[in-house]
Length: 156
Image 1 (cartoon, rainbow, N blue to C red):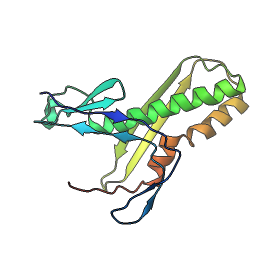
Image 2 (image 1 turned 90 degrees about the vertical axis):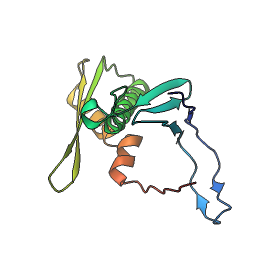
Image 3 (image 1 turned 120 degrees about the vertical axis):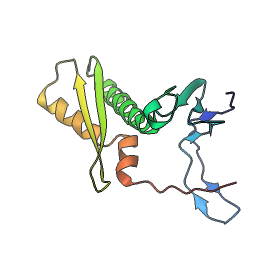
Image 4 (image 1 turned 180 degrees about the horizontal axis):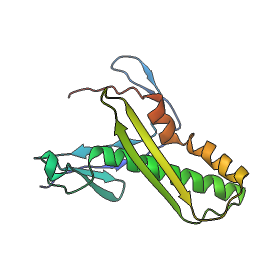
């Protein structure tokens, strides 16, 4: 399976006017393209990085990459670790290794709940831990997921 795809993380400094309907849009923060030729496997390019998404063999896929929910949770975990490192660096705090364990649970009614456990190997005082716990709840991906982002879909 050969597919062309590209992914670009871009920060635009201006707002884009959609001339098809005259609506003003927010600045674009991220952009991803994905191609899937056959089956469930999907090829994704994130800048210079190639990613694959798929479903497990138990779900009819070929298990060539993480499933979509695993990719979603990976983005949350990565954003958590990166944001904590950024904040710690600004404050001059050493975090040691960061381990983020993220799980998605669904109840019988379909309600989602994400459980996130963060482990840091450096010794931190209670004030530092409280600050980092507060920051973890405000990472960009955390805020996007919690906001219940609107998704607008078009078929071309």
